[in-house]
Length: 240
Length: 109
Image 1 (cartoon, one colour):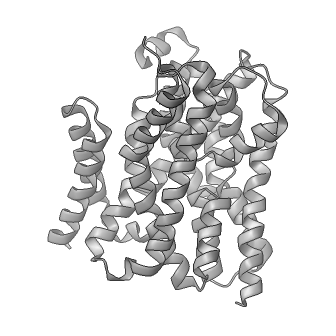
Image 2: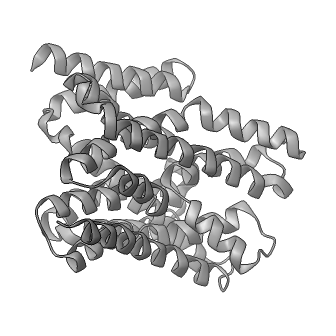
Image 3: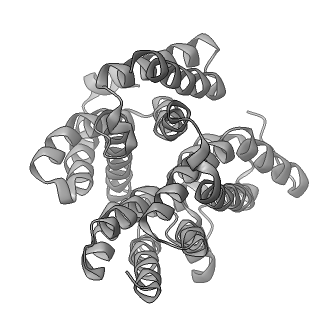
């Protein structure tokens, strides 16, 4: 397979790949967050900072929604933390897939902080087409570009989204989960595909019985079952 | 709430999310990427992300909750159809799905 190599080419590919669709998706998604943050009483710089530093929409939504209902600070921070717990397994699965070389602690912290579902899914998809020596450069450039678009979208949504017609706003909110669904449908590997399907199957049940920790429960049960099922040769053949 | 409280909430939520990322860094330095534990954690992350996406599309708590389930399912089906019809172009799927949701909401509700 031809792999993109060289600083300039890899940077250009990162920019093209991020600006082609993911940056637009984040811009529109974070417009929704920006308008929600405004109606909850957050200042624009608070909303922008929340996007840049929390950098995980489910946690950001938990933050504004619980603030709107007047919960205490500890409860809000705790709910945001639970909603973003996926970053723990995402960081563990992402970094070795990006590079097997040892990175320093500071670099690892930077990679972990820049990770989002968008960069996680898109970079895992693109890495086979990129020279391993340049994957970290590709990832950082990709992640910073979409982070910039997300902060811009937050501020844009904060100031203008009230004037957009409702069907259009709904369509824009819909783009982000739709995009992830399409990207994930292309994931390969029997264990991975089994885990994706089981995650969808488990989450309605988890949400019904353990709404506060539904995603943690889904990850542990669906992921463990997918891990085991994907290793059964007959099932593995059907899935891959 | 006061401005100070809102700032504390934003910074507290940032720190709380960062804690999970930091935990990931601590584990990734210790783990063998060829081993079964790594594979298992990868599967857990896939299941969590799939569950999150499924929940956002099918059981939304955002404004999307005001869109009826058949419209959401229809828009997802149209998105996948367009995606495969246009030889797996993400842009085609995302545009078709987003536009059809907007159009269905506009005409049907």
